[in-house]
Image 1: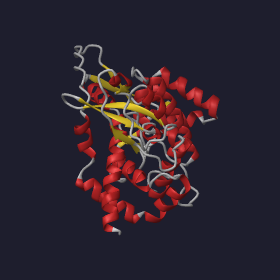
Image 2: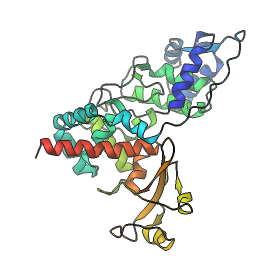
Image 3: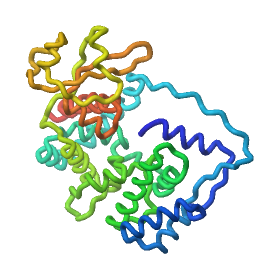
Amino acid sequence: MPYFLFLLLVFSSALSAKSLPATNFQTTHDFINKMVNAHQFDKTELNFIFSKVNLIVADKKSKPIKKKAKVKSMSWHKYRNLFITDTRINKGVEFWQNNKTTLDRAEQQFHVPQEIIVAILGIETNYGKNKGTHATLETLARLSFGSHRRKKFYQKELEQFLLLSRENNLPPLSIKGSYAGALGFAQFISSSYRHYAIDYDGDKKVDLFNSSADAIGSIANYFDKHQWHDYGPYTRPITLNSSQSKHATYGTRKPKKNAAYWRNKGFVIDSDIHPNTKLAFIKLRQDNHFETWLTFWNFYVLTRYNHDNRYAMTAVQLSEKIKQQFNQQNP
C-alpha cells in the first residue's frame, strides 16, 4: 500500500491530540444520514457503531510541527528485494502445492497463470500471514472525516465497507485490515471486494478473510474483469536513446501504439513481436540511474491491482522464480 499513508498516520499520532467518539462530529452524522437515506441503514445501529469509533482531534494549544521532508521514492532494486526472497519463494511453492486444485481451476476458467495469482498473494499478505491488524471501520472513518487530501475517496470506501459488512453478515467493528483499509488474503479495498470478490469454495459466502480458495478465484476474476489477455507476455528490457527515453515514464502506462508504429519511429523492437502488438515503455528508478523496459498489455493489467510499476514488475519476477522452483520440485 502507498507509503505516504503510513507516514500520515505516524505524523498524526505524533501530534499532541485527544481522541473523541466519531458521533461527536457533525460530519459523522451527515454520513450516517446519507447511509440511512441512500441504503436504508438503521440510524440507531449506525449511531451505536460510530460511537465506538474514535477520531483524533489535534490540540490547538500544541506547538505546530514542521512538515517532514518529502521521502525519496525507494529504488526499484530495494523495493524488489523486500519481496523476492528465498523465504517468500519457498512459501509460494508450498502455497501452490497446498492449493493446486483450486489454482488449476482458476487458471482454466480465467486464463490467469497460477504463478501470478500466487505471487500476488505473496506480495500482499505473505500468503495470508499478514492480513492487517488495524480496525477497518476506525481506519476509514479517520481517513474520511479528517483533513486527508483523499478523504472523498475514503468516504466512498467507508460507504462500500458498510455495504460489504451488511451483505456478508460481518460485524463492522470486528473487521481488521491494513492501515489504509485493505482487507483479507488479497488486500482488496472495500469497493473491489464488493465488485470483484467471488465465492470460489462453494460455501455460499464470499470470504477473503479465511478462504484461500475465495482469494484465488477473486484475484483471477479481478484480472479477468480488467481485460487480462490469455497468457500474454509482460515485459522485456529495452535500450532507448536519449530522444526515445522521453516516451518512457515512471508512472504506469497503458499500451496504445503497436510495434509497427514504434519501429517506424526508429525503436529497435525484437523481431518476434507481432507488428500489431500494442506496447508501452516505462522507467524504473535506481539510486543513480534508471532502467527502461518495454511492457505489454498484461503488465498494464497488473498495475490495475496496484498503480506502481515496481509492484507489477515484482509480481512478474517473483512469479517466475516461484514457477521455476515449483517445476523443479514437481517435474
